[in-house]
Length: 328
Image (cartoon, rainbow, N blue to C red; front, side, top):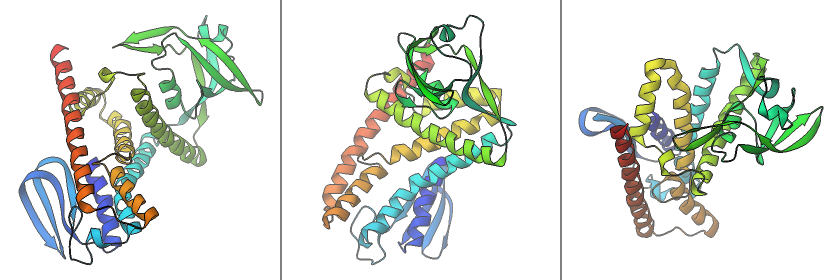
């Protein structure tokens, strides 16, 4: 469903700027049924994994004036970027659905501590509003949860807002718990809630969506920087196992996971890497800056090599996930 939303973004944008769409398909593999409306064939395939939007002249040259390759650079840019945009908009909508039943929202302001709380002994106080952890901005408890993950020595630097002033706290200590090679800080305090109003609902929806985006970017940076190893990564197999366990407990708990996945899909696709939408956008940007289109053969070669690397990486992660399930 998330991939179809992505492809639908491309489809709507292509239609709006006059690009010919030859086929829009749901799923892959053998055709179950199809119909044609106007110039586009709409097709439903047997294997319900993703889909595609096939535009004229997308990956090859074409004499058709309405082909993707013959349209102005800004129109092609719009079409490519709208896939990820639709994923991000869906993420925002799913976050709104998740928050709708809640009667109050969480803040990042300390309300009270556990008995003999370690963090209180190291300088954190009641009514402190946590705004930074280890130099990273904190907007919601999602940011806070991620900042409290994989801290090796149990100490973090914090910036809090106290009595209207910023106060820097160095080496705030927490007890820790280790699970699957990752160290978690034990949160030894509670936070204030915020009464739900229309304004706070809109604000919290926006903040939570931004926090999802921030956590995804930070986790990618931390992965590249070596904070997390390959054992912390999962592909479709590992993800399906996690979602299956969540669904057994409560089906509605899948909605925030879906929100995280669709936002991740949107952001990851914008990375300037070959075979991704971001790679295509990079070539279009080069054209917009230089006024010269990158040769189609060269761009196709780059995307082809990038796709093979991406496929190899996916197979590696999938093998890791399957092995993890076998030895569990």
